Structures are given as C-alpha cells and as structure tokens.
Image (cartoon, rainbow, N blue to C red):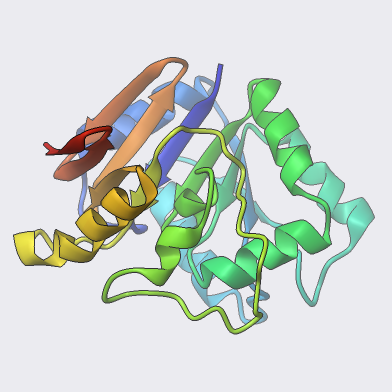
Amino acid sequence: MAKLVLLSDVYFKTNEELDQKILNLLDCDEPSIGYIPSCSDPDRKYFEHTVRYYNQLGIESIHYYDLDLEYDQSTFERIFEADAIHLSGGNTFYFLSLLQKRNVLGLLRSYVKRGGILIGVSAGSILTTPTIEIAEYGQDADENHVDLHDKKALGLVDFEFAPHWDGEEASLDSLRDYADANAAKVYACQDGDGIVIDGEEVELYGDVRLLNHREGGSNYE
C-alpha cells in the first residue's frame, strides 16, 4: 500500500506530530532520502535548505539526483535504493515535463508499489495526484512556460492538493470553483502542515481544508 507525505513547504517550525509520523513511516535507524529537484539547483541552495530540514529530524543521509542539466541515467537509478524519495517544490509544469522526458513516472509508481516512500513538497506533492491542473489556480499559480499539454501526474491518490493556503476563507474561492468545475476533491494545505497517506489511511496534520465536490451539489468541509 502507498506511503506518501504531502507537504506545503519545508518548514522549520516544529510540527512534532507530523515529524514523528514521517520518522515512523521510515521505520529504520539510519534512513536514506533521495532528493529530486524540480529543476537543476547548481548551487544546491534549495537542496541544502531541505537537508537542514531533515537534519532536524535526525536524518543525515540525503542525496541529490538531478533530472535536468546534470542528469546522468546510471547515477539517477541509484535513487530507487533510498528509503524515501523527496520531490521538491518549484514550477510544477517544468517538473512534470522532466519526469516525462526522463521516463521516471512509471519508475516512481513502481517504487511506491514496492514499499518506497514518496515525500512531496508543494509542486512535488501535486505530482502525486491524478493531474497538475490545479497548479494554474490561485494566487501562487505556476506559469506553464514549457507549454505542457499532458498534465497527467502520478495518480497515487484520488484527490488533488493545493499548497500554500494562507488560512483565509476568501483564498479558497478559486479552489472551490476548481472543485466544482472538475468534480474534484481538493485539500488546501497551509505551510507547516501536511497530509500523510499510510495504506488506506489519509491523515491530516495541522490546518488542512477539504473542498469536496459531490454529484448534485458541492460539499465543503
């Protein structure tokens, strides 16, 4: 069964319950994490930020695997030996285009099927859902500068994920419109909070709002 962690952001303010759940999922003394950036990070600025996040959880083995300018197929294949794979934030359209270009979508699905853990942040979380269409909605919408037409993502969950919710009701309006127009179930998540999928269980940590369209009307919880 799938083991996924969907985060809005890499956040250093401690959410002890969520942090402990991540460690419980990893369930080993010295877990290893393979990090995939949404685009090349030549100075490792964003990678090092993520390393510091994991270090505060007591995780030391985090390795960088590039799908973009520094891509090397033989090196990249080692990522599937990691206990968890981290999909970074960034431009969701460009990230998906890289996964398509390098034929990685099927490999990630197989990795999860074998028991590997996926940890997504922002764009990385959206990529675990059926489609990245939602990345075009809201104040923090991504620009589809690569003119990506095939927006099907990993499809590991039956809902969609909207990161960076500011906690204001008015900010949910465009997501409600999206849920209605697409008959979709959408979780809006604030930075510092997250969703954990552990088999059949969907666990919410922090202030996560469900916008759930149902046939015959909309139900917002």
